[in-house]
Amino acid sequence: MSHILLIDDDESLRQAITHALQDTCPQWNITPVSTIEEAKSVLHSQDKEGKSIDVVLADVVINNDATAGIEILKLAKKNNMHVEVILVSTHADSTDRKDAYDLGAYSYITMDALDRSFTEKLSSTISDALQHKDKGVTKSSDENTVYATRIHPAIPKTQPHIQKDSQNNFPLRTLNVFLCHSSRDKQSVRELYHRLCDENINPWLDEKSLLPGQDWAQEITKAVRTTDVVIVCLSQSSISQAGYVQREIKYALDIADEQPEGTIFLIPLKLEECDIPERLRRWHWVNYFETGGYDRLMRSLRFRAETLGITIAQERKFSYLDAPPLLKGCTKMTFDPLRAASHLAAKASCAR
Image (cartoon, rainbow, N blue to C red; front, side, top):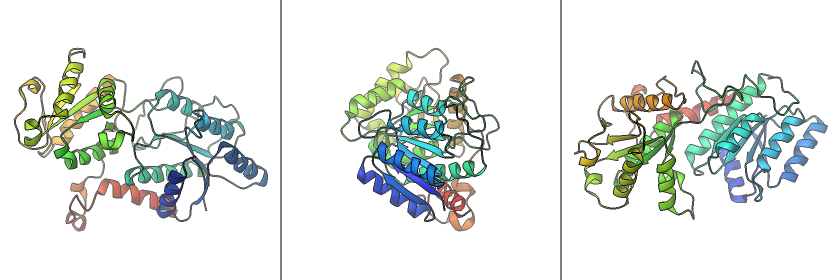
């Protein structure tokens, strides 16, 4: 039985994550705690008694202490505890992520929302961490040592060359993509969002990325300003709809004008056959609804990623078209093979 220490000061989140993980793998023994002191007590006692905590799953910020997660990570590595540490944050902070990998974290996961997609990703990451731990990787007492054999679980292990920082040996950031769309096209855009996630791309979608209480207009403007690529999702309804989507497009156009010549920054994507607005016609668009449309989009995203020093896996993952005949009878509304495959992988790893 594998033992997992869960550290989170939010009781509702702590309970929800505990139940979700136990549903995925009943053999996992989850120990939930709410403070750093409790976590240290568990880690020290298991160290003295010879018991084993296999994975520590910690919130980066605990009880308003922004260094709490890193402190737990330092404790585990400094004392040579044979444990993998996974940090979870509600916001993507490149500095925190860098610090975490510098100190030997197995993974640093951003939680946009506590939904099925996140819990499946979390379960899969824990399963990978347990397998990594079982291989008996040698630990170092030097907290600044970075383990060359460590591979971030969010990056496909079939990828032959994983680009890492030459000094710190941690994976470089993922490609950030902003999904500009009309609310009427939400279902199609959700599907695109999940496909991009499965390519290890970081898409920004309002319902996934915005937190309760945030100024949505300000956050959207910030997201467009800091993104690597804006995908403008077009349909017959969106091009005729007045409102915020038009302001998003206008702002994206302003940012696009600031980009160096030849940069792929704005990609018009047609969800169905429709006219391209005059102001977007200077950019070559992709017909997402046609066979091969998604592959053409990915070629553009890979090209953009390469200019930024980011590697995206070339291998095509399991798709709906690859499903056996029995599964092809399912509709996309009732069966998502990408997410199901991830869930089954976690189950299979747990069973081993």
